[in-house]
Amino acid sequence: MDHISFIQNTLDLSVSVKEKSWLLTDGTLVIYHSRGVVEFVPSLDFTSNRAVVLSSGVHGNETSPIELLDTIIEDIQSGKLSLTQPCLFIYGHPAATHQHTRFIDTNLNRLFSGYQIPDDSVVEVALANRLMESVDRFFTKHDAQEKWHLDLHCAIRSSQHYTFAIHPYNRHYKRSDPLLRFLSQSKIEACLFSEAPASTFSWYSAEHHGAHAATVELGKVAKMGENDLTLLADFEKELRHFISHDSHTDNEKVISSVIEYQVTRSIMKHSEQFEFHFPSDLANFTQFNENELLAEDEGVKYRAQRGGESVVFPNAKVENGHRACLLVQKIEN
Image 1 (cartoon, helix red, strand yellow):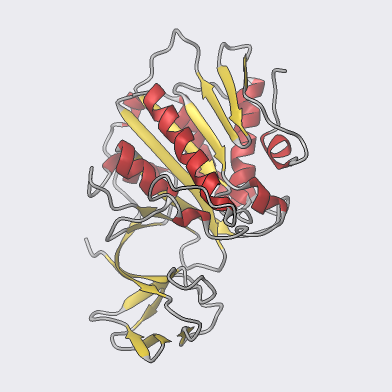
Image 2 (image 1 turned 120 degrees about the horizontal axis):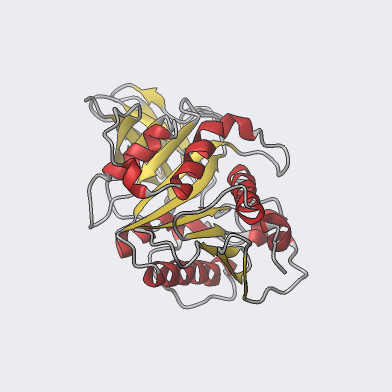
């Protein structure tokens, strides 16, 4: 076996997956670790100072990043794209994708705070453990000067920024200039700077491995096979360049085109009485003026703070105890 279809092999849940490895014609080592986790290591005569994790499908119905990474994997295997650093590709939640849903029991992207005791009633717990272990093993094996993790998603609603990223708060750096350079070069429109530790996949890699990491939102959710990947052409072009060129060539200064936002706070859902005071189809980054009523929960009213705030990821249907939305303010340079 010298070729895999990332999507087909991952989505066929009837077939068991065992670790296997083989060499491509250009000497690249392929290691198919487990369902949805495949590693590519350039030939042994090449020394890289960067190791890259590219993940998608952590939310099962967010399919355009899965398809985008699949085209890249196909071109690596066919020889059309030659890597210059080891890359770990992760397809996060195949069972949820198979069922055309965001998750099975709970939101996988809230379970990366650290290893947890498996819970038979929540399939995502064991899955999160396996994905964290995959990242730990990869970054330990390739202890490069630079570690990267781009966790690719797409939004469930319209947005005033078609593409945007979330820069995780972490103990290693407040602001990753290499990450912002990549985002600007790949035409990502905006970046949100988190205000506190999270339990997302990208936060895990930033916090535990010092990786330049981000959650990258690429357009809007669509069914598998119905995504228009031409809308993501700028991002795909830069991503391909990023993994196939020496990192030393990326050090030139770039005037950033990325609009920056600071996350001011999160509104948490505490009860089934929670409700927003705006339409359910409100676009991400919609601005609210100071003191405008945003939400209410068990009699507690949430209003826009001084200077106004914009709403991102509003979702009143999340589980109790989970984040119902982010509130952000634009950073004026």
